[in-house]
Structure formats: C-alpha cells, structure tokens
Amino acid sequence: MTYSLPDNVSSHHVDTSRLRVHYLATEGDGEPVIFLHGNIASSLFWDETLATLPDGFKGIAVDLRSFGGTEPKPVDATRGMGDFADDLDALMDALDMEAAHLVGWSTGGLAAMQYALDHPTRVRSITLVDSVPPHGFGGTADMEGTPINKDYSGTGAAIVPQEVLDRIRDEDRSSESDMCPRVFMNAFYWKQGYKVDTDREDAFVEELFKCAIGEDNLPGDLASSDYWPGFAPGTRGVNNALSSKYSNILALADVDSKPPLLWVQGSDDLVVSDASLYDMGNLGKLGMIPDYPGEDVYPIQPMVSQMRWFVEKYGTNGGDTTQVVIENAGHGPHIDHPQEFQTAFHDFLERVGS
Image (cartoon, rainbow, N blue to C red; front, side):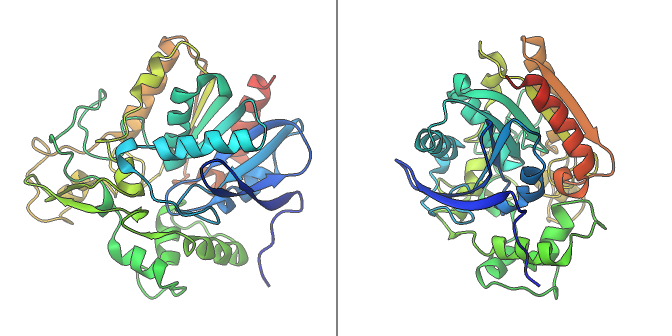
C-alpha cells in the first residue's frame, strides 16, 4: 500500500519570477495560510495540518528551495533567510495573494519571521512551531544573541552529521544505523517512541531523498576556525544560512506593524531546546565532541529561553502574542500531538482571521 494525500489536498507547481515552486494546497477558497517546513523535510510534513484547516481558510504548504519538488537553486547563506523570504514573496505574487497567514516549523519559523520583517503588511499572522529562535541556530550566549566567538564557530554546515546527508543522497531506506534517514527522522522529528503510520513514514523518508545535497544547498560549504570546535560557517547552503552569523531577526520585535503571533513549543524537543542535541556546546558538555573548553568559554545556546524572551518583547512592544507548550511533544508537535496542536492553532487562526 502506498501513501496518498488527504482527499482535500493536491499537488501543484508554479513558475515564479525567481524559481519553479512545488506546493500542496487545499481545495476551495478562503484566507490563505502558508506553511513552511523545517530543515531536511518538505511540504508533505504538513499533510494532516492542511487537511484539517477550519472553514474559511485555504492552506498552501510550500517546498523551500533545496527541498521537495521545488527547483534546487543555490542558497546564498550570507543573506540568512533572505533567499527563502524572497522566494515566498515571488510565490505570493504568482498566486495573486495580497497577504497571508504564515506558519513556520523549525527553519520555516525563522524564514517566516524574516518574511514578516521584510514585508509586514503582507502577513496577517505568524505561527511559529518549535521555531529556530530569531537569534539564529547556534553560537550565541544570551537573550540578546551575543556571539560566543567573532567567527561564530560551532555553527553552520557541520551541525548535521555528514553521514546522514550521504545516506540521504544514496537513498538509504534501511534502519541499520542511527545515521540512516529513517532512524534519524524518528529520533529527532517527533517525540521518541511516537510511531508514524508505516505508509506515511515511508512517504516522509522518500521526501528526505528529494533534498539537494551539496555545498550550494545541504549542508553548505565548510570553513575552519581557530576557536573550538574548529569549524565556522561558510557562505553557501542552508545550514550556513541558519547560523547566527547571518540570521538575526530580533528587529522584528521593534517593527511598527506587528502581525498577531502564536508560538507553539513541544516540551521534549531535542532540536530546538535549551540543551539541543545539535548545539556544539551541549554536545561538548556531554563528551560527544572532544576538548570541550567548558561552559564559561563556550556556553550552550538557550534556544527556547531566547524564543520566550523574544515573544515577550514582541508583546511588550505592542504585539498580540500567544504562547502554548504542548507537553510530551517533540520537535514536530503538529505530527506527534496533532489534536493539541490543531486546537491551539485553529483557535488562534479563527480569532485573528478577518
């Protein structure tokens, strides 16, 4: 048996002024809600969320460049989330959308914030799901995003094990190693122990194989560093674009036009966490990277605390904010706790929709 999209969801391509984009969409009309997926994922990871949108809303889940069926053009990491935000703007133009509600998961959350900073009048609301904080991923020490080292060592292309990416490129469908895409996905994308339906899991794995692997896409190019752990972000590719060296969107809290904001966080997220298993400081503290200089030299990035601080600042500065923590949920609460996520998301969407 093969996995099929929900009955009210279909697949589409559109040529924009920047690239050819693949997206999933629900049937009918309504206020547009655009979903942006996380790193090493695709639009398919929003399938159930799309299918259950309340009446009056039309869902569009986009494959970002480097992922899914969208044209895999290079990512200029020095622009942070700029390529993703500009691609989204071109897509909205191509689909004749004046404005939309944005929903971003993980990396998609950072991209949604960048778009809201660049085009606040085109954003009706922002929902951030276990989002990378606006400080970027890795290399910062406090709520203000102070860099640990001047070259942002420990961030960028090397944050994802190369063996995982090699096995994605080789379309490894097995479960023989922790580095297999299937095992990697089940370990980090949702709460450990949660079991996705077999056909759906297989479909998700096939989506991972669509990632564009290489220095221009995933993971990006590597740079050396004189600081621990010996590497720094390059200038190309997705993982470098996530680095705090290039992605810092804290200014969003200060814009005059603030879309209503919902932040949803899984309590047991292993990726975006105050003790992330992708933070070099935490891995060093755990003994998984040698010669760790200690937390006084290379502290662990407090990602969730940074997000909470940012959301509270956004609210203090006049924004309409809602915070929801879903207990026992992992990095993808919309997948491992769909009912709890949908309740919080639908309540927010119906409250702020026009």
